[in-house]
Amino acid sequence: MFKLKENNTNVWTELVAGLTTFLAMAYILAVNPQILSVTGMDAGALFTATAVAAAIGTLCMAFFANYPIALASGMGLNAFFAFMATGGGFTWQIALTAILIEGVVFILLTLFKFREAIVNAIPKDLKLAITAGIGLFIAFIGFKNSGLFTVLIEPGSQPLFGTTYASGSTTLLDGNFTSAVCVLAFIGIVLGGILMWKKVKGAILIAILATWILGMGAQLIGWYVPNFDAGLYPLIPQKIVSMPPDISPIFFKFDFVGAWKAGINFVVLCFAFLMVDMFDTIGTLVGVANQAKLVDKDGKLPRIKGALMADAVGTTAGSILGVSTVTSYIESSAGVAVGGRTGLASIFTGAFFLLALFLSPLFLTIPAFATAPALILVGVMMMRSVKDIEWTDMSIAVPAFLTIAFMPFTSSIANGILIGFLAWTLIKVLGGKGKEVSVMVWIVDALFILKLIIPILQSL
Image 1 (cartoon, rainbow, N blue to C red):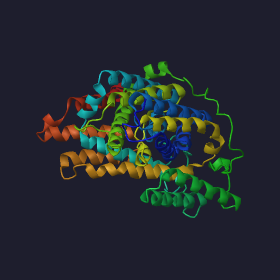
Image 2: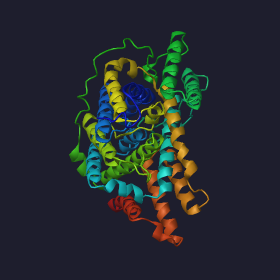
Image 3: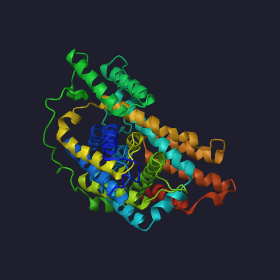
Image 4: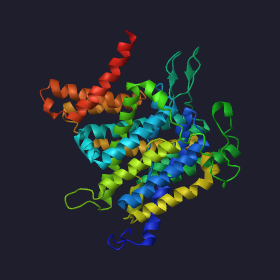
């Protein structure tokens, strides 16, 4: 079924590759519930949904495309869901409805081969800038969770990341470099960086676990003191194995009525999910396929339709289960590096995600400051894309820079996409190169302009 001999591999090699990929991306089981639970969603249910959605998407990749590529709720996409979609006036139920529609649209686009055409029409440099901008935004969230950033909140200002601050006084967030949280998080970042530099498999997961273990030691000696009011929870799990948490609090919780009432804002939200997911998925598929030497003589990716369909089905299933967009993971390259070449490796990775369901007490005890290094290190990896942007051409460099800068500085991925696309079009058109603006870019511009105009018209 998986053509092991034709791909110069065997069952044992695929098993090792599947386990390696799981270890490299298992941090999502701890990080995703933490990120999405700020919306009010149940953390235990999110753990179960994250594991099951990852297993479904990864198994689809195995059977649809026979690729050693694993899927799970995407980093960046989950941040967009939690910190922009719900913080921008939507409920998490409406955001889940947007994910469902995104998945269904992706299935249709994949069936009719439109998805590849859409991606090919977007300027390469903007794709790279969006990836880098998301990386910076993810890192910003990691720094916030680690306590390494000092953030000054002015009285009456818009709350960051859904957190409610006192409106009558200025609040100074944690930036104490002598605190256990800050010191341990910094150790995790350095350790993870060293392990990634030395190409140690599962470097991010090891950094998370090491930071957590050091945190447990800090709790035992009294340096780290649990304080529920301050968001500092006990770090030592009371048990390790249990039945998976109930998924019913978030299962099939769509709000179609609320989505309809949101009107054009909901349409823009769906489109933003579509755009970000497309960039992430295509880039990952091409990158891992090149590493595994799965591309054909023309540099094209065989069975791309099956791979994209796995992503679309995974996203649709994930929305039903109650999690943000499911997408291909670049950490799959860790499994490829040890010899994974077929979908059998993905079968094993999916099986490990299902096994993890019974270890929820362990994963849910991992603190935010221990997963912060994972967010920051993923941000580092995503920032690599800036090296391929044509910085010497200002008609490209300015839109790319604005795209990158606006995402972390405005706490909005959507704002980064908006300003980048509009700047790209205006500079090209006013500079006499309007022919370089594709139809797809014009469509994106039209949607964003409509999003800006509607609130103005409503206020008149």
